[in-house]
Image (tube, rainbow, N blue to C red):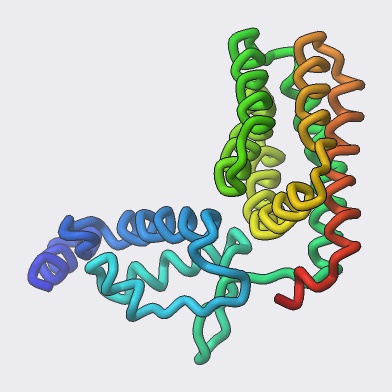
Length: 237
């Protein structure tokens, strides 16, 4: 508390403790947001689950000020829903919202990929091949989701964009829980088409075939959208 007061009197940014370290409020909020983002995307919180500010502040050894900042950051990313005078919850999607977000991904991600194809270093393409092979071998849902996210975002990594890359990242964040549901679904059905898509995408990238890469990716995302639409119970859970 003394550090915060001294900072305010001197004109410096107020300080707050996060896990024992004193940081400016903005940086403290960003660190808490980063930790909470990882927990939400990792499945530690479920869609619709309440996020209790007091519990979050206690875990990070912080005041409620940076916790509120963290929640506002994640609200802007679509990961958290804040209701005035009520509280904060992990955002959940309706079936219609999920369909619309996947339709956006279906159209925007091939465009982002097209910016990346020609500039992807050969070494990155070989790493993508390794990730595709690792996904095909993996028997763990969470490992697959992590590898899949790395694979696709890495395939876009050579794209020079101003806004599109950030837009795609937000869309991935908002659909993360439903990617997990789809992964469980195709594994239960022993559907290997996801793995075939990844392998075909690597071939297209290796050949620098932008048209084929876009076609494979659009079909890959569309398959997920249609599968989720066939299981409305996912959105009621």
